[in-house]
Length: 69
Image (cartoon, rainbow, N blue to C red; front, side, top):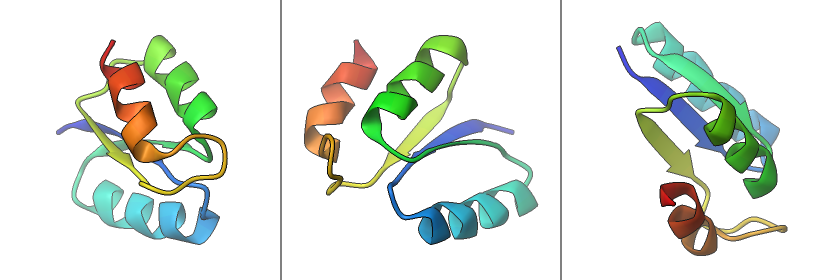
């Protein structure tokens, strides 16, 4: 299965998604903000990133191009 990175400042939302994705057999990495997510991307091979569009430190639209590079 896939390795999925969840980036969302809401811990309850990350936890719910993580439980559902792991139950489906995926490996899930979790980050509370854009900076933490970028650090995980540098350390781990990731197949899919799920990003909250509105976050305090960096919104999803700003973060996505950074993750791609």
